[in-house]
Image (cartoon, rainbow, N blue to C red; front, top):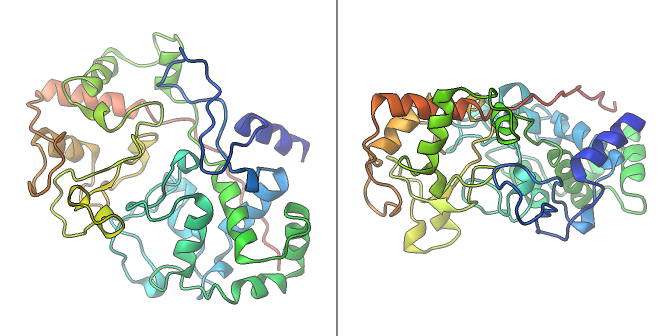
Amino acid sequence: MKHLRLCMAVVFGLCAGRAGAAVDARPADADPWLRPAQVPAPESNAPTAERVELGKALFFDPRLSGSNWISCASCHNPALGWSDGLPTGMGHGMKPLGRGTPTILNTAYNPLQMWDGRFKDLEQQALGPMGSGAEMNQDLGSVATEFAAIAGYRARFDAAYPGESISTTTIAKAIASFERTVVSGEAPFDRWRRGDAAAIGASAQRGFELFKGKAECGLCHMGWNFTDNGFHNIGLNSEDPGRYAQKPLKSMKGAFKTPTLRDVALTAPYMHNGMYASLEEVIEHYDRGGDLKDNLSPSIRPLGLTVVEKRDLLEFLKTLTGAPMLVVLPQLPQ
C-alpha cells in the first residue's frame, strides 16, 4: 500500500484540478512536447489509492456487463495498447460495433470522450458502454444492487468512498480513477527532447521536422499528447456522421476526434472504422489528401511527400512508444 501511495503521488502530483480542467504546473517556457507533471482530476473525485484499486477491480470485472462475460478490459486490453486490435469493437452477443475501440491511454487529459465527443468526462464515459445494449448491455438500474450483494466489494467501496453508497455514480467514479492512471510512459522522443541526442536516430529527427512542417501533422496532432482535442473530417470513405450527431454543424459532418499519437505503433488498426492496418497506410492517406472530398477539413490536402520523407515520418512515429505500464491483474471479490 505504501508503494502504491508513492506511485499515486508521482502520477497525480498530489493535487487534483477542478472538474473538467486540466492541471498544468509547468512554467510558461516549458517544452510543449513534454508531458506536464500532474494528471488532471475533478475535485469531486480526487484520486486515492483505494479509489484506484477499486476502479481497477471493476475495470477487469466482467460482472459489470449484462452477460457477466464482458469487462472494460475486454475491449481496452493493456496488452494491445489499451485497445483490442480489431477494426471495430465487439459488443454484446459477439456482434461487431460500428466503430473501432480507441485506446484509453492518456484519456485523463481529454476534455471530451469517445470518437464523437458525446461524453464530457471519464465518469460519464464509464457508464456509457456499460449501459449500451450494443456494448456491455448492463441494466444500470440493478448493477449497484448486484455489486452491493458482494461482501468484498462492499468493503472496498466503504474504503474508497466512505459515506457514499454503492451506486452507478461511485462505480463510474472508481473506474474513472483507475483510467486516470493509464498514462503513457517515457518514450525515446521524450528522452531526446530532454537532451539525449542519441535517443532517436537521424531519420526520426527529420521525421519530426516533417511532422511539424511539410507533412502538416502538427496542425491537429499538437503538443505532448499529439492531439488538439478537436474534431475533423479527414476524407475517409465512411458514412458515419461522427461529431455531427452531437453537434449538427456542417463542419462536423464526418468529423471525428483527433486521437493521441502516444504509443500509436501499438494501436493498429487505425481510424474510427479501423480501415487502415498499418501506419504506412495512414501516411499514404494523408499524403494523397484524403479520399472523400465532401465536407473535407481545410487542413487536409495533398502533401507530395517523397518515399524517403514517408519513411522518416514513420520512424518518428515509432519513437512515441513509451515504456509499458506494469499491470498486475486484480483478485476479484467472489
